[in-house]
Structures are given as C-alpha cells and as structure tokens.
Image (cartoon, rainbow, N blue to C red; front, side, top):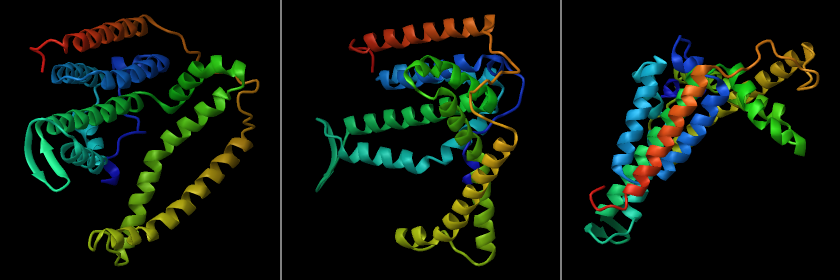
Length: 273
C-alpha cells in the first residue's frame, strides 16, 4: 500500500498536458477542486468524471497508475462513507438502531462525498504527475509573486512546498524498506487490535524520523555548498512564457466552469437528480 500513493510523483512522458505551463496547471487544479465542492448532483459528477477522463487520456499517464493512489486513502473513504450513512438524518428511513440511522438521503450524500474525495485525489495527482518539481516551484513562486509586496516570502514558500512534494515518494520508499527490514526480524504489523498495531509502528517511526532529519540536514548542506541564498539575485535558466496551447487550456477551463455553473443552476429543476 505504501507504493500505491501517487501524489508527489512525476511520470515522464511526452503529452499535451505535460507541455502546458505549470502556472496554468496550478490555476486549473485550484479551480477544479473548487468546482468539486460546487457540484451537488450526480449529473454534475458524471460531467466532471468525463472531463477528468479526457485529461488523463491526453496526459498519456496509465489509468491504472492513477487509480493506485486511491488505495492509500481507502480508510479515509470508508470512514467518510460510514459517517455520512449512519449520521445523516433524512425523511426516508431504511434502518434505525439506537443512535445509528440509515436513510436514503444519507446514502446519497455518502456516495457523493466518496466520489468527491476520489476526484480530488486523482485531479491533484494529475498536477504532480505531469509537472516536474522545478516547474512546480517556478509556477508557485510566480503566482505568489504579487504578495511579496506585503512581505510574503514567495520563493521560500514555493521551495518548501516543492521539496515536501518531492520527498513524499522518497519517504514512502524509505518506509517500505524499514517495514521489510523489521518484518525480516520477526515484526508483525497485521495482527492484534488497533492499540497493538499502533504500538508496532514505533519501530518504523523512530528510524523514519531519524532518516528524515538526516536527509534534511544533507539537503541543507548541499544547498549551502552551492551558494544558495533564496531569491536574492537569482536568475532562471528557463523563463516561463505562455504559449498558444496554454491559452487554449484556459479557454477550455472557462467553458468547463460555465458548464458547472449551468449544471448547478439546473439542479433546482425537478428532472435533475
């Protein structure tokens, strides 16, 4: 399951989505996440799924590779479904026992919430899978540049966010190695109750934290050895310039947002479920 997490990884391949400017992809991802909370009908979710499927197909990233990231959040999805099914009140009651009540409204909300979480994870994965860490850093810094006038350290924030995303796969690989090493010494992470399983994670967390601090120290020393001083007198080898494909992507994004708003308005009509 550790290797199934895809957020933070980059999939090197030549595709139209990879060629889009990082700033444009950041804006698209941000608005995509907002629209997920704006959609409230199954017809809207079908439209979002179709659009996201077209983007994934254009990115040339295998769909199986995208869906692998869902396994890592399966517990969150199941917990969300449980809370919404048993804790949502409604008029059409299907089952009731003590404080637990199952209603049709609760089931519908649970399905919508689970779909929303899955789409959010896959949509965020498209950004990191099709954008290199350097491009992501430059894109975030460019978007935050106007806030530098009020003292916001745009470059430092972009660098920290990119480093955090970059080291997610590294830490996952390190966790997998530590778990295999502990299992080879007789450790058992699957048996016992919840408290026993939590205690069994201590032999993993301690060396993982030590390894993380060591990597952070090595990275800091490497950056200092290369005379890194943040954004001070910094130039870029590749200047970010919007191309015609970027403007086309923004036009498609505008049409997508208009369609989402139209579906939201149409949701008040009785024939939209």
